[in-house]
Amino acid sequence: MRGDMSNPYAEIFYKDFKELLLPLHNYQKGAEVNPKVRQVVDYLNDFFKKAAPDKKLRLDVDNYQINMKKFADFVLSFRADMIAHAADVKNPEKEYGRAPEMLKLLENLQKFCVENSSKIKPDFDYEIYKLNRQTGHMEMLNRLPDENQKSMYFFGVNRTSYNNPQAADRAFFHPTKDLFTNEIFKNTDVYFVSVPSYFPEEISAPLILNTIVKPEQTQSCDVTFAQTYWRNYIGKDLRFEGDRIVAGKPLKPDELKQNLQNLKAFTYCTGGANAHRCFKALKNLASQLYPQDMLDKLWKEINVTSFAFPLEAEKIDYKCTALLCTDSNPNNPEKVLLTNFPKLYNELKLNQGEKIKITNRADCKYVTCELPKQVMSQAENGRWEVKEVADHNGHRLQNVTAKNVCSQNFEVLKYILQCALQSKEVNDKKLKNIAEGINPIKSKSYQRA
Image (cartoon, rainbow, N blue to C red; front, side):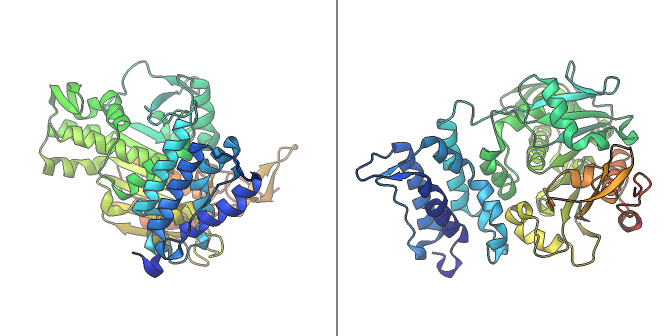
């Protein structure tokens, strides 16, 4: 029993159900309630009982005419509701959002969404596209990635429809055009790894939380991806039956090391969880070919740069630089990070007046950037003008990938990725000089109109 450690999300969900959902529906004595609605209410009541037994919370929908469309929309919004209330939770370091009963509730709500929508599926396979440097557009793969070529895999959050390079163009370039058209990638193969639209982000919470809590676990989609697209990084002529390698041969240690050095990733938010599991799946396969101590050492050759998914260092077995963007104003927390990584967030967030904070732990470097308050906007006359940021949201990818949003953060990220591409260590002093030496408005790229 939690006693005074009751999960505060129980009261939040209970209040929102009573005050935001039920008033949208008619109360009519004797109204029949859909069994599917009762099922979700049972899920919630079970959560209340386990998460806050002392509060005696219990929902009752008897005599309500529930509109299933409105009800389904409400169920899909639970994860967003958690994030919206993150700053209202006292003692967030207790990690209420990671509690077993929370994960069980989100799994049950995901099940409801899948069973009641023809557009949502419970499982998926990744879609992968390659950037064609000549055309400047995404294209379907016509051959496996070249393990001898330096490659950058971008794992993002934007969904794509199956076998649709035009959709991939939009999903890839909308937040990253300034970054991936930069000259630092001119000798690098760039790939976009996406999740299909039939697995929307609204139902991905159980998968993401599982990755945070149990980072050693993988899904079938991760194993399939590693076997299909990354197999040549770890061996020659590999064939598989299930999770097992049944044919093929290992590489020489120097070959394996070079291949892993060529394997780079840049990830955003939940894409960081997906990339982590794919690397774990690849390592599990490689462990069938090489001694574990050798593999543990060589796995540090893989370089991952993440934004808005700062997984704890002890859970990472590759080299990682994790960026986040926070406001030094304590009244404007980065709510997604506060929900997913409350302990780490409180350690890494900027203090008043800081422009950058660098924290080194094991093989992970955490870099906290300043949240931009102004952007540059090009007027009709071609001159650049300063505008206030309308949405002070530290979670937006453009906070680090768009030059006109925050040029110093863009330069910080560019330097980190340049080091990754060259297999060099990031220099902390140079990082600070970049962050503190570039005025976000009076930079070389953008001058005040």
